[in-house]
Image (cartoon, rainbow, N blue to C red; front, side, top):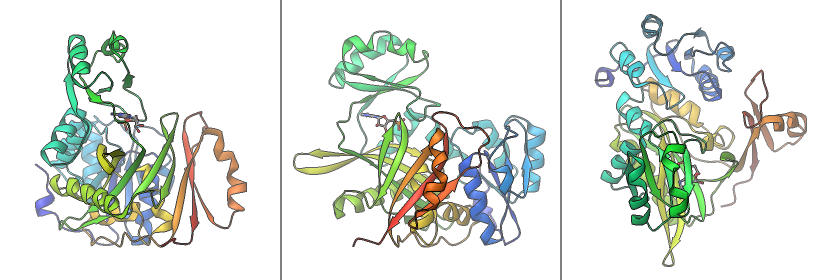
Amino acid sequence: MTRSRDFTPLVPGETIGILGGGQLGRMLALAAAPLGLKTHVFCPDPASPAFEVAAARTVAAYDDTAALDAFAAAVDVVTYEFENVPGPTAAHLAERVAVHPGPGALAVAQDRLDEKTFLREAGVPIADFRRIDAEADLAPALADLGGAGVLKTRRMGYDGKGQTMLRSVADAEGAFTRLGGVPAILEAFVPFEREVSVIAARGVDGTLRAYDVAENVHRDHILKTSTVPATLDADTAAEARMLAERIADRLDYVGVIGVEMFVLPEGGETRLLVNEIAPRVHNSGHWTQDACLVSQFEQHMRAVAGWPLGSAERHCDVVMENLIGAEAGRWAEILADPDAALHLYGKAETRPGRKMGHVNRIRPLRA
Ligand code: AMP
């Protein structure tokens, strides 16, 4: 049981605890500062990028209950920047301090089977799927779904990890074992035209705000660009935002949520299928930092503090590009562009495939 029901909104000077010290935690902490809110970052990695911009830090394992107790006592609300916060950690904290978004929403997003089941029950369109608990489940499920699909582990998958594309019965041979022999789902293959996402926020009082739809391009399974506005007709864009708001509402959510969707043509119409939800600020929402009055990071801080949400209006068109690995070396060239805003994460070590920063390139609003 969370303590949200008897939650008292924070006042300036109070502290938001953040589990996870990556770039999202860093940008959350940076967004809290202008609101007069302090942040305390809890992360096992002593080299966490968020530490250098937060008022306080705890370096400890997520199952260190003494450290969690001290953290809970030192903060006024807890949030998190990654969805794989262990369930027992969230539950332990929720007995001591309000945790936003609540452990229930976190649990749904951590397990693809629970997530898909929740979405279907909420009337949200998704790709057909089957539960896969053993090698023998796979071939009949694949045949059932038309002979092509994506096998995904139920837990701990991200950026294309923990999943494999199956294009034929031959591909299915041994695929379950190769993925680790862990509980999985098989999803029907979606012949999508483009991938989009919506960042939505829900306040403690149930207020909903969805940002404009972003069109996302991935490279090597990692988000490369988010472009806003997306190439989408007005009705479909409105539907996408409505779906994100519905998901946040049904989860009794507090904070910012990222909802990834596929866009596919169907019988002359455009159809949306929700792929997955992220119970946190999301990479495809970084454009809001420079194209909106209130970014996704400030919006999340407002929501978890129990404060009124801000505007999600967009005041310019924008393309966000992730700087991956050595690409961050382009910083000087980006700084020379008057329409570009550079965001570097301060990571000590550059590694291939590692998100080192991003750039938002803005243009005047088209419409
Ligand atoms: P996910 O980890 O679920 O976000 O999937 C990573 C990427 O794999 C997505 O961004 C898609 O490009 C692709 N993908 C995932 N599920 C499907 C699907 N059912 N059909 C086709 N492509 C998919």
